[in-house]
Image 1 (cartoon, helix red, strand yellow):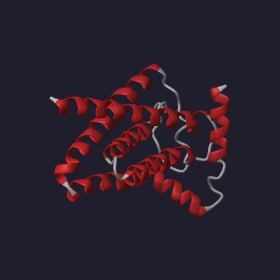
Image 2: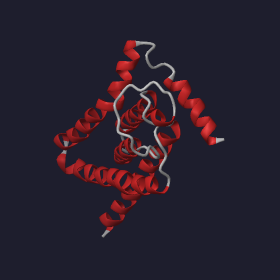
Image 3: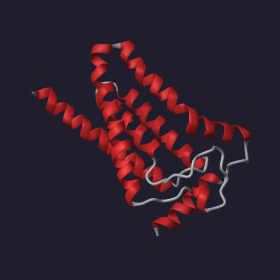
Image 4: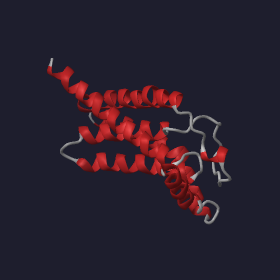
Length: 177
């Protein structure tokens, strides 16, 4: 059932590859390069107010590492699922090594960062929402360009959010002491 839904949604997204040059360019940008813009924006927080934002950056780093290097790696060892371009004839826009796809490390990493930014900007949620939208665009672009299934980015996103919540909770406990 989930696999059928994955194929259906993937096909609905990936079918537009090669139809419009501008759409392909946007997909490639968000799948491969936008992550650097997001990291740059995160670092800008240090220049804006180092004392206020240093803790947020540290927590976002730990949340991203927890999501990508622990949760994603463990799940990939337990359920090595191949990428769409390996198992099917898909329209592939970017080069990618043949590694396990489930869950998406990109989605986990950037949703961990975005969720941490969201949690730290309680009075001005616009920044956190922009980071969450950015993480979503990175994740959906990974499906569009043919390197991930929709369930890969969905589960990766959840792992990133959960990691950020865990690290944020630990950070609050440590701050109390």
